Image (cartoon, rainbow, N blue to C red; front, side):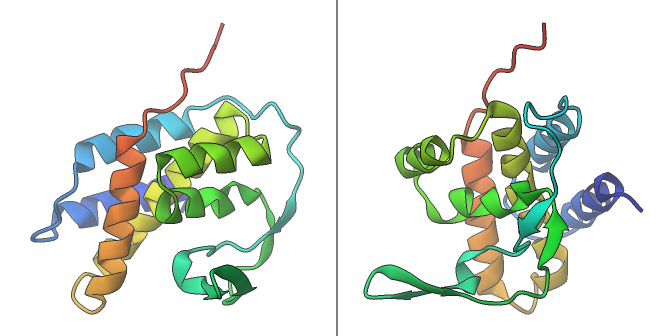
Length: 156
C-alpha cells in the first residue's frame, strides 16, 4: 500500500470519529495538492531522517534542546518529514524564521506541511480513545497546517 492510500484510509477512519472537530475535506485537499507536486528543485538525495521528530521526542532543559529521543523511525530517505516540528511547535512568525534559516524551497515546504497533516491524521484513529493529550497536540498541529496558506507555485 502506498503512503497516499494509507493517508486516504486514515482520512476515512477520521470521518468516523465522534467529536473530531477538523475540516477533513480541507485536509484531503491539502494532501492531494501535496502529492500532485512536481519534483523538488533539489536533486533527490537520500539523507538521514528521524521520522518522528515531534515535541514528545524532544527533551528541553533550561529552555534549550538537550536531547532527541525515540529513534525507532530512523532511516535514510526524504527528510521532509522532519519539518513537521514547524507546525507542531512554532507559531507563524517563528515558523517562517525556521523556514528561512533552513532555506527550504516552496515544494519542500508544502511537502513538510503535508507530512505534518498526515502524522496528525494517522494519530486520531489509533489514539482517539486512549491518548487524548496526544490527539489534542496533533489536532493543534493539523489546525496550524490548515491555517497556513501554502506558497503559490509557478508551474509554468
